[in-house]
Amino acid sequence: MEELHALLTQCLNDRLKSLILSSPRDEVFLKARLRPLLKRDSLCFQAEEFRGKQVFHKNLSQDEACAYIEQCLTVHFRQAQIQAADMQASVLVSKKGKITVKSRKINTASLSPSPLSHNRVRNYLLPEGTPVDFLVELGVMTPEGNVVHARYDKFRQINRFLEFIRDVLPELPENRELTIIDFGCGKSYLTFAAYYYLSRLKGLPVRIIGLDLKEDVIRRCNELALRCGYDGLTFICGDIASYTGISQVDLVMTLHACDTATDYALAKAVSWGARVILSVPCCQHELNSQISCGLLEPLLGYGLIRERSAALFTDAIRARLLERAGYRAQILEFIDMEHTPKNILIRAVYTGRKSAPEEDGLDAVLNFLHAKPMLKILLDKASVKKETGK
Image 1: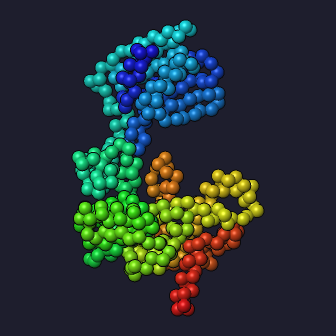
Image 2 (image 1 turned 120 degrees about the horizontal axis):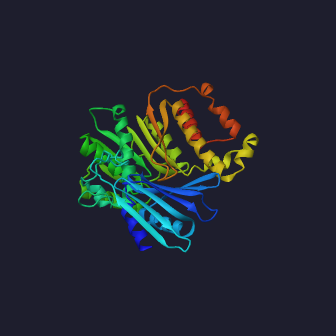
Image 3 (image 1 turned 135 degrees about the horizontal axis):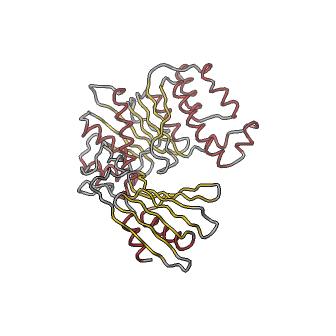
């Protein structure tokens, strides 16, 4: 077993091409196969298990892959064939359990690049290797600029959000200070990132306000902004629904504002005539409790299906309502689904062209579902108030 473990430690890397387990000793597997895979820029190994007429997949770390193969050769298989870029090997297991390992090196002088070499390090807007003060303070980077391995998902999320901001820059006013508000900012990774990107990297005059209900979080964020010298970044303790501290906003951000808090943020953005809205909703419970539709009950009777359908319906309805308010709305994937299931981003850019309620068919859908979404209530109330002056 030691010889097998040493072999696996040597070959389980990005030079591995394939590892096939065969000669089954029971009826659990017909065969199994492993291959290297890059997931979110980290190397892992995908196990493909052939069981009867079905195929199952799972991703394993290097240590997990090593233990998996050793377990398979102890219990399920008698043979393994390993093909790597620089070696070939075979493992045979006798009926008495004796393991024989044979391997040979391959001349690497004329080898083609690793099959994973096309997955080059991505060019992030905040690049790896360059220390960023707020990322160091928040524990995402080391003082040398290396990304902390356990915070890589957060690092990718930050850069992905900055890409959305970069894409909407042409829609924002020029030659004056930009005003941005982040509703439900929490620990404010994205708030700090937006300020750093716009102010420090792009050299734009910008004022950003982060709003959250947690006093301790707001205090820490203000302290960090002060330490970093971010003069145009402030944090305020307050509620989305009742916030009135500003009259004009260019960009409204909301990340994972829970349930109808997203609706209040979107309604505020519309009332300000915000040029751009970037919203990642979360916990869309409202529609789940409202939907009452006999025709769909055979499908929505399954709790998980009802929950996910209601969440998707909610965000699609929000996008349509924003189009009624004069925005061009898109629903986009924010980050990899493996990082979080809450990966939908609503991007809305103000055009002034309002879709007509009698033409978009949304009211008929809401009647069909017996749904009264909060955003529609808020926008309708604001419209009546504007028309009557009350």
